[in-house]
Length: 73
Image 1 (cartoon, rainbow, N blue to C red):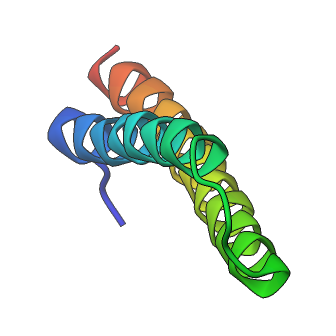
Image 2 (cartoon, helix red, strand yellow):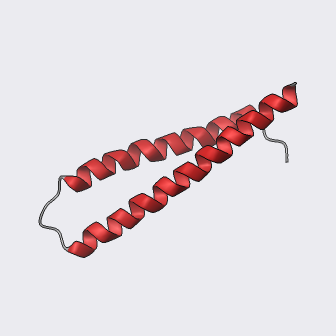
């Protein structure tokens, strides 16, 4: 499969967007009170899973960017 620079940038962009949105979600979650314990557990799991997805997509994006640069040389 041929990876182009634009594909790499899309992956990196999505990863960055996930990090920004879930960082905001963490901030908002920390500011809530009076919710059941399960609410915090469920949302914490959601945050962790999405940050792991962001890390994987970011890693793929960096590798694809390197591969695209190498292919040009």
